[in-house]
Image (cartoon, rainbow, N blue to C red; front, side):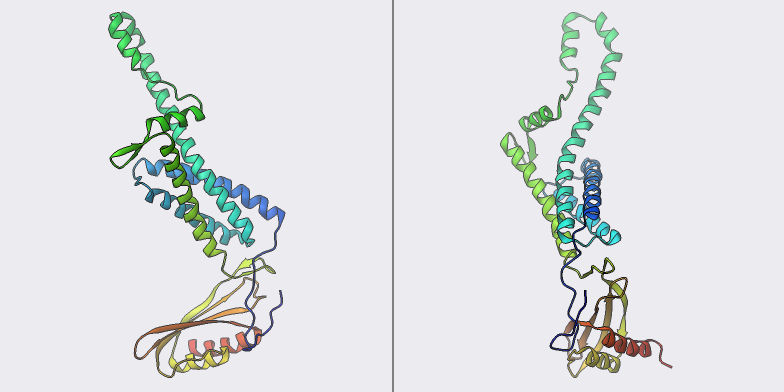
Length: 289
């Protein structure tokens, strides 16, 4: 995508994300499903040690979103609808997976208890009938199907403070957990996909250079970049961001602190010519000879 100067002589920022690509879509969705399964398993393990109501679901969503953002950046997936859809599916799988892995744990506990019961079978055969019957009544019951297990869990109720949410209230609380997981994950990802992306070299913009500037150099690069600095500043810092291939405009950020206190910043986009002129000043600042 070619970018031209705007009315201030600065380059136009990159707009939009990557074009839709079927292969990227399929791979991202598959990876999101796997991600949801892994996070669900980790949530069940962590939840056995620490599981505060509502807060835990938000933490699960934050972890899910952070993994999605990291994968998006590493794999350079830039089509925003693809990324958001994959994250939503990952959240759905995570919520369902938490319940399913809890169900699998119930089956595992049942098998352990059943093996223990088998070892006592011979003793029960020689015990009085009434005693044997009381012991048999306390034997573990198999969880049954996943659907039946969820219905039984809803009937048993979910602890909510000093009372238990039963029936539809239990289902509502699980639904709220799911919404919190999805909201936290999508909030992180939605913020990240707003960052600039270059569809020509298929890469997210990244910081290529950053550092401090003295007042003279800050004033010079500000003039070259079309940024108006106040007269009296105490210090300044800069940051350059570009795509991997360097085929798009370069983002230039300048942060400064006034002598009387207060901080300000400005971000502009530079074309190749302005970027080169700014870079020469930065080179002289970094390596004065």
